[in-house]
Image 1 (tube, rainbow, N blue to C red):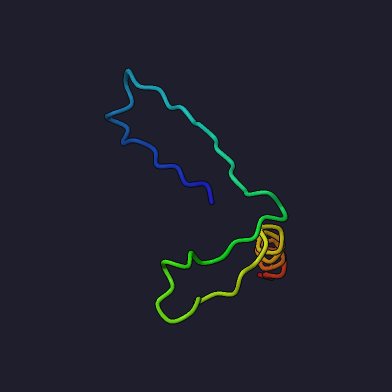
Image 2: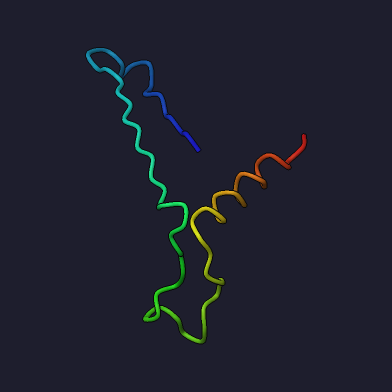
Length: 66
């Protein structure tokens, strides 16, 4: 989600706004799982590939109807 906060009108003189974009997504087939040292009594979530996770997020976003 992209979020921007505009400065108050009295603070805009002499300033400029810059945007820097950064996208990060692991390789599609990379397996994502809980680190063994972080598991208390088993993993809370099952292991999943990066691609499966991404496709799940996309399906959730496109299935939402107003």
